[in-house]
Image (cartoon, rainbow, N blue to C red; front, side, top):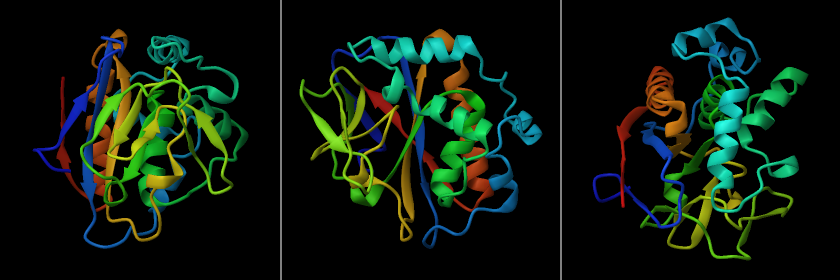
Length: 221
């Protein structure tokens, strides 16, 4: 990510938005997830207390939904925040390991209640920004070719268009077996105080524990 890791912020976003994140690099393609990280994919895992954050609750979920609703998006049903999907899957015991980058993302999102996007930075084309796509925009979010409509939904965008958001990330820029560099975006809100900054700090700590070197990025209007 060039320009000192700057992410441009487009118009029409909730002024309460506090998107945070970083770039993580591994010296080789993603290694397997360590057992301690996979164990944290369980809801209520006691090691999550290391985050230092209060557990996610209804107030966190309401604040995240309000953030996504600002531009007119309806965060419910199949369009609810990814963090809510993770909580349900963990409660059912169906949240399994995918790869190291995704597992790190899912662990942090599960235990903080904030949705997180993670993309393979080498698959994205700069410049990168956060913006609300034009009405009628959609993208494919899985290998089966299913699409999500993006009307009113804040998205991470690259030169080709939207590639990630707090609900479902694009198939186009997803991580894979050969991934070495990822961009993580934590979709937070000022309504939750410093929760975004503390989530990013814990996320970086876990990523570095898993062998990544991490660099921050900043948002510019």
